[in-house]
View 1: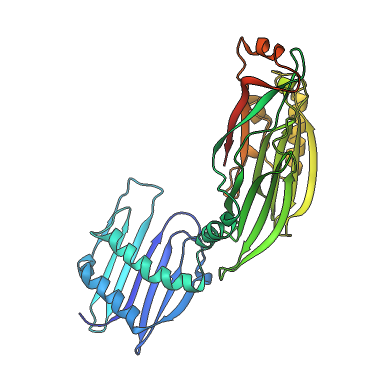
View 2 (view 1 turned 90 degrees about the vertical axis):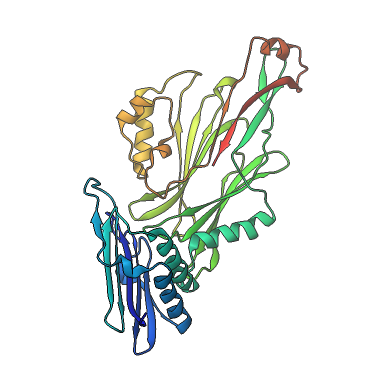
Amino acid sequence: MAALTHLHLDEHGTYMNSGFDYVYNCDGGKASITVRIDGVSEEDALTLDVDDDFSRRIEAIIEQYKLLKWDGFHKSDKDVLDGSGFGFSAKFEDGTHISAGGYERYPKNYADVKGALDELFLTKYEQVRPNRKKVMTAYFEQVILKDNTRLEKQEISYPYISKGGNMFSLGKCECKGGAAWFPVYTHENEPPYMLVIYLKDTDDKWVLSCEMYHISEKGEVTLWGEAEIDPCFFSSDKIYGYIFTHWNGEQLQLGAFTQRGYTAAGKDSKFYIDLYDINDHLKPLANEMVEGPTRNKEWWTKDKIANFIEVAEKFGFRQSMQYWEQMPNDPVFASGLKDNTNHRFSFSVTNNHNRDFYNTLINTPEGQPVAEYRVTGKLYL
């Protein structure tokens, strides 16, 4: 086989800057590649010089998978209206060329060829522009988890504490705690921020906090900002919480949403939203309170719904009255976010009373846990 002078493999879909482009050129013995990954525009593609070893390896792929047989492959599946396709071309010094393409149809060994070229081109690309999600994973596992356990979906529970007679309160939450991370996207394909959430057990309370890290294009990790989301996240009067990221216009925000008030204990519910500007190192933006139901099992009234929507829309959360009418028992407007910057950290608890609960409660000394009874639930990431 004659020496390779040009190769181009691309995939493309229906959304802007979808797919990828791998281009190899060799002119006068000087070889270079251009790489564009998914979500990156042509203007931001990366061009690099490569050595003779790279050229030999790419020619070996052509021989191993007999890509000369691809020439003339042009097939499409016209029944697929919103699919993806590929294009392939190669040229050699002796004038031989290969031309192939398809829409939802691919030639023999296509997946193997793409995998082999991925390894070649992406390895070079990531030496200059590291994959930020890989950088985040490594940093979290090697640095954050040195001093923290991994915060997974886990069981949580509160013991019922007797207050005398048939009265009770909730004791300190029982939970493992730990740390979790999420990539935070801007309008780029590669996420430039990493959000680390911590749930820490102090002497008398659970503290929920976060750290934001910036991941540069070169893979450098910088602490970007810190915030104590809730100093008493699992206390008996705060039993519901969310953390989320959110675009409001051109502003990328970090939000926290908590419910305070436990209706089974006879308390009113109040809902708080805290917002931070991510681009400005977690600068505080707002702390708002909205009142919820006043009694257990009370549905959200229209005035409470309207109040919630007013607060939500002020900060860029687009929810309709129709949503609230369909889901009157779901006051969490953050749950309606649909963009890819949204992440949620939440937990909920469920009563497990039965007929014997109050008899046991009455016979339990004041200040003591009520034997065998807990309010239980799960923490979600």
